[in-house]
Amino acid sequence: MPTKTVAIANQKGGVGKTTTAVHLAAGMALEGYPTLLIDLDPQGNATAGLGVTPAETQNGVYDVLINEMPAADAIRATNIAGLSLLPADTRLHGAEIELVSKLARERILAEALLNLDDQFQFIVLDTPPSLGLLTLNAMAAAHTILVPMQCEYYALEGLAQLMKSVNLVKRHLNMTLEIEGILLTMYDGRLNLTKQVADEITGVFEKRVYKTMILRNVRLSEAPSFGQTVYTYDPQSRGAQNYREFTVEFLSHQQLPPREAVA
Image 1 (cartoon, rainbow, N blue to C red):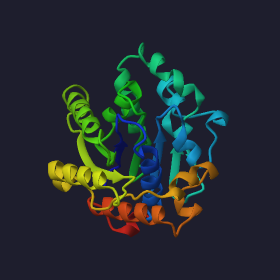
Image 2: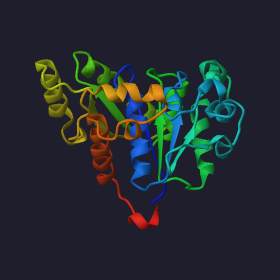
Image 3: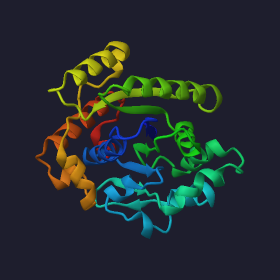
C-alpha cells in the first residue's frame, strides 16, 4: 500500500483538531504502522504535544515550505516508536506572507512529500483553523480530509464552509481529494443539544460519520502540557480509550497489507 496522506481540518477552531491529529498519528504508530505527523499550525500545539518545543526547533516544516529543504532533512523521531514528526516553529507565523510570492505556492508541500519514497504508511497533517496558504498546501497534498466536529450550535455552519473549500480545492488543486470521515468530539451525552446536533450530522452524512465519539475528558486537555499523548499520560483514561477505539475504526476503513509487512 502506498503512503496515505490525511489532513485533519476544520475552519472552526476549538474542535479538537490538533488533539485528533496527534492521537490518530500516535495511535497508528502504536498499532504498528509507520506514521509521520506534520504540524502546519503556527501555534505549534501538535509539536509541543509530542514534547518538542517549537521555539527551540531549528529545522521544520517552515524550512520545507520556504527554504526548499528536503522534507527528510527536517523530520525528527519522537518518543513513540514508529511515529516521526515534521515540526512547526515560531517562523511559521510568517509563512503565509512569504508563500505569496512562491511559484506554485499551494503545491509546495505536495511536491516535498513525493521525495519521502514511501517511508511511511500514513502521513497526518495538522492544519490551522483558517483557509490560508498553509491549509491549502495541506489540502493539495492530502488524499483525504478528516473533519473533527464539536457537537454544538454552529458546527453545521462550519462544516458547510469547509465543504465549499474542499470543492474549490478539488476543482483547482487536487481533483482526487475526498472526505475521509467526520469525527464527533467533546461529546457530552447529558446535553440535549449535543444529541440533536449529532443526530443531524449523522442524518446528513450517514456512513461518513464515525461510530466512535470522543467524549469530554480532562486528561486529554492535561496531557499536552506535559509533552505527552494521553496514551502515556493516562492510558486508562476515557480519552485514551476513545482515541484507541477511533484509531482501530479508522484503520478498519483502510486497505492495509498484513501487519507483518509494516511492522
